Length: 261
Image (cartoon, rainbow, N blue to C red):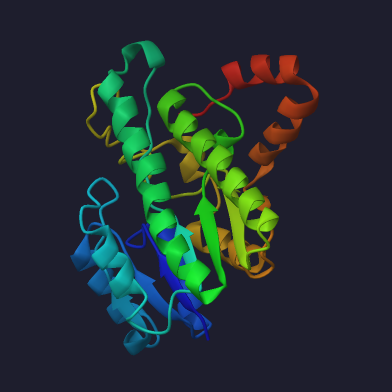
C-alpha cells in the first residue's frame, strides 16, 4: 500500500479523496489548517491507525522542512502528494483590492509550489513519486468574478506543466497529474474572498448543483492511479475548454453571459 499526503483534507474534495483512499487501505497523511476537523475525519475512517494528522497552513510555511520530514517519516515515504488546498474568490476585478490578488497567489500558487519543491527532494532521493495538482476549469479559461482565482490556477498549470517536462527530460521517475474540477458541491464559494478580502459567506448555485465531492473523488482516483497528465472532471461545463480552443470568439460571448455565481 502507498502513503498518500493530501492537503486541504478537512472538507470538500480533500475529505472525499481521504475517504476514498482510506477504503482502499492506503496510509494517509492528512493536512489542513483546522486540526480539530482533521482529527474528527481521522476517527471516522476505517483504519485510524493508518491516518496521520499533520496541520498545514500554505500561507505560513516557515517550518516547511520540518513538516516535509515528518510527513515522510510517519509511515513509508510519501508516494503521492495531492495538492488540493487553496482559496477562491468572488468579486469583480475593478472592485477587488490588490491584496486580495496577493493573498490568492500566496496560497494557491506560491504555497503549493513551495510545498511541492520541498517534497520533490524526497521524490528524487527515492527515484519515485507523483504530484497531483487539483486546479480548476478556470485554470483553463477565465470567468467573471474569479480574475484572481483564475490567474492563480493558470499559474499552477504553467508551473506544473513545465515541471513535468523537466522531469521527463531528465528521465526522472516522478509524475505530474493535473486535475481540473468543474462545478463541485463544496463550501469553496462560501469561503471565497470578496473584493475587500473577507469571506463572502454565500453559496453559488452553480457549485451547489455540481458533482458531489464523493462523485468527484470516485472519478479522480482512477485518473491518479493511471498517472494521466491532465483530466477535466465535471459536468457539461467542461465543454467550455474545447469551445474556447476551437471557437474563442463564441466562447468569449458565452462566458460573459454564463451564470457562474
